[in-house]
Image 1 (cartoon, rainbow, N blue to C red):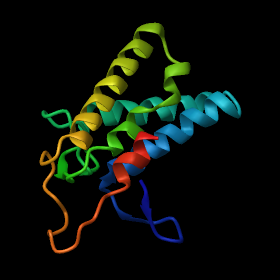
Image 2: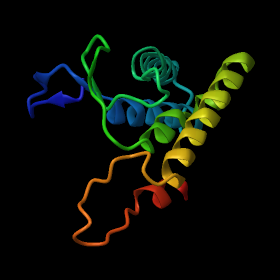
Image 3: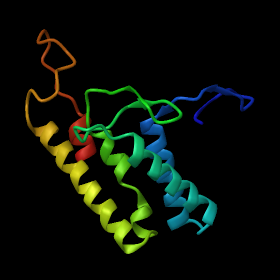
Length: 143
């Protein structure tokens, strides 16, 4: 649970997919680069399993917000955060077939990100045409 008060009590049981992906990434990175604690790897795998099972929509994009059980609540316009959710360092610490599956998923995520980022009109603009603006989100994630 990520929505906790200062005393640790749970405020909200819904899950932000971005936070879940980042926490999963952090745990796997700790396992791979700091110390190979099985609890970190187990939790990273648990997070990755939850993301894979509940957080991808049928169009290949991800939900932004789901219930504790993984039911979709909200889906945002942008697609680039799915790259971060799929860039799990679990690629270095799982079985060969699991690693291949994750690599394929990461490629798929990157392909969708690239298509949406480079095809004008696929995502409804957030701003009006009153002031010409260019988002830096896409290029930033691309780097």
